[in-house]
Amino acid sequence: MLAGTTYVLTYGVAVRADVPQPSEFRVQINGNYSPGCDTCDAITSGSTALFAPGTWYYETVDYIAQLDDNGLQPTIYLVNDGR
Image 1 (cartoon, rainbow, N blue to C red):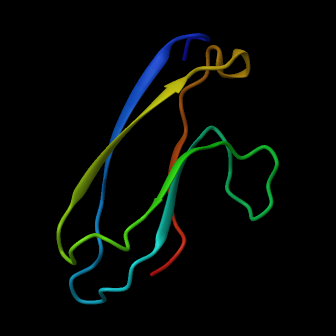
Image 2 (cartoon, rainbow, N blue to C red):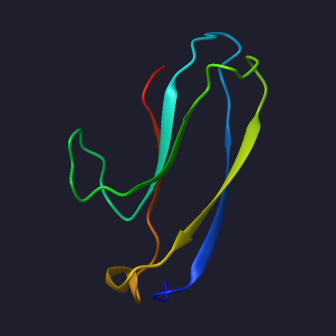
């Protein structure tokens, strides 16, 4: 990654058709998830509550690389806070 460069991430989210329980989700770049983690960077979050079960929805988010990201490969986490 190059500090100051904007990276665009497109990802898909769905509610399982066989277990239609909505959940919260978040996308993080460069950081391991741990509840209450101060260094975990969630760059976007949302809920699948309004999604039709079995249907994929595509989201896009921009991330501007920070000085600490310079020269590193991006690590991307899509975290599901439900089932």
